Image: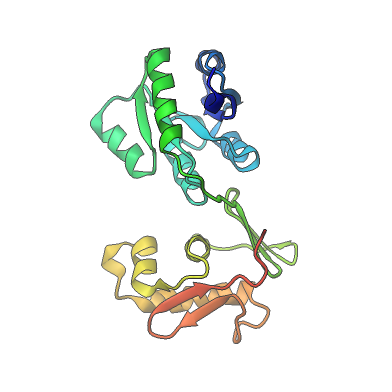
Length: 235
């Protein structure tokens, strides 16, 4: 057992009991602490609450699939993720890597290779401050659960409104340009359609700001873009 492995906790997200048992035995024998989740929903919750040092994620999950779990995780965290899958095609590997995976291992695999991949992930991992909950005054955004509240009451946002808020939160304190927002939320062909943004930002301010005409948090940078200002950030 190494000192590094003794301090590292690995989260396994896989719906197959036998695979989870094999992974647990292999990882624990090398000194890692292990948590398990049998679905994507439970895995996201475990990642948000327990903050493991790495995730081993199966692509073929019931409910929320592995790729969607990965995309949601990347909305708020840069935790190292090793994909496990029976799918060995290049297209599957490319899709997973493009969605934010750090490495890809095809089933069946040897215990030695698994441990080598995990060690490599942990060596490359940089310390990050992944805060899944962000507070701005009386606003609270739980990125892991996609839940927004204002003064404790749930705020219902459309997909576009939530996407816009999430993007501003990810870059909080910095200006996000009109083009960047349009490209992220509507695609590269929508970069000139700034009227989309004006409409959605107006709706967002109506729902989140105490005075939408004098916003405290969702600031406009004239001719450039928007910026989220944290007046009471989570410490």
